[in-house]
Structures are given as C-alpha cells and as structure tokens.
Length: 242
Image 1 (cartoon, rainbow, N blue to C red):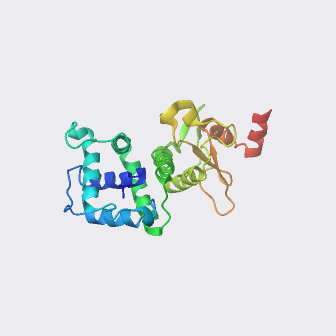
Image 2 (tube, one colour):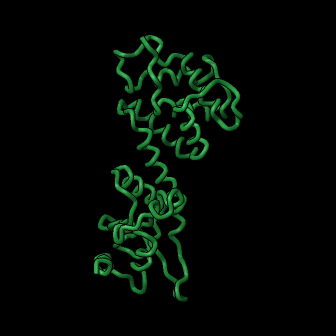
Image 3 (cartoon, helix red, strand yellow):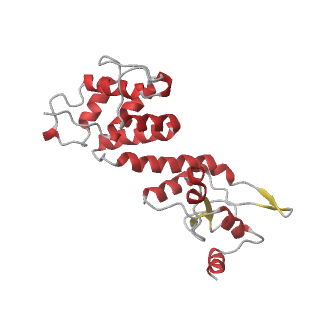
C-alpha cells in the first residue's frame, strides 16, 4: 500500500515538534518522536482502512521532521530535500511563530477529542492571527486628547477583546465596522489584519454587566460615539445612512 501524503495539519505538528527542539535534526530515537507518531495515528485525517502498516512510523516522523528542518532559513539549505508543500509551513512558523504555536496546540486538542479534520489548519491560522493581532492592539483603548478635551474610548481588557474577536473570526465573519463597514485589512493589507476596536453600549468607560452590548467599530466611528456626551449607536447609524 502506498504511503499517504502528509496533510498540512500533520506537517504543522511536525514543525511544532522541530520548533520545540530549536530546529535541530532528529532520528527515530529522539525524545518526542514516538509521542508524535502516536498522536498522528490517533488522528482521523485518513481512515484506518486505507493506512499502510507503517503509517506515521517512527522512521517517517523522523524523515518528515528533518525535511521541514531543512527548509528553515537557519539551515541555509543544508540537509534533506524539501517539497513544495513543506516550505510554506516552515515559512509561516518563521514569520508567525506565536500564531503557529497556538494552531498546533489546538490541533493536538482536536485530535485527542476526535474532531480534527483536513482544512482545520487554514481556519485556525486565520483565527489566531486575528486574536494575536487584537491582543497586541488592545492597548489602543486608552485616553487621548482631542480639541483640548480629554476623551476616552471603551477600556476593554485584552482577554475580552481577544474573545470577542476570536468569536467573530470563528463564525467566518469579517472584522469590519458594524456601523460604516470599514475593513482595516481591506484598507491596509496585512498591517490591518485582525484589527478592530470594540464599543460597549452600556458604559462609556468599561465593560458592563449582562445587559452590555459589544460592537466591533472602526476608530472613526468609535470616536464619534464618544464625542461630547456620547452619541447613541442608533443615532450614529442613522447619520451614516443619510
């Protein structure tokens, strides 16, 4: 029976294993190889009926991991050959390591829960890219001076901000302004990916109780909602529609 092609999800887990070892070459006896082999055998990316007896064996784990390691810039092309499918995985680890580490963690959780599927990698990458960008940008919710009047925008803590943004992305919705439709990623490309501000309707300065409503808004609309005594959401929405 022919060897089955590695899925992107499997390669991400192998790359994460390599990253945990500082991208040093491995062999079948390296600590962690057997654990990764057991994990990938547990996954349901391929039905058991079509798997060869040596499916994701210790040898295959070692070979694939070393192939991925060979694609790392620090290796300067030294090592085994790499395939076109392996290089993008390593490039993403180099460019967005924290995102990829979170993707790998959730893939492991899904495999153990029996819910992992081919295609998860791309969805999780988009999800965690948005979440991490949101966490980094949460500090933008702070005091600022406008026309010599000290104004504030909603002080949403980073955990709440990340949860809301992650939920929006998980639903497949775009992070555009709920009022004017402005999309930071569409306007600024990768720089704007995952960025959005949150407006809390029941309090001008903090996240409220069960009755609070959190709306994703652009910076302009957020300022208008807080200008002066603060405009109601429906008032600003009506003004934008006229």
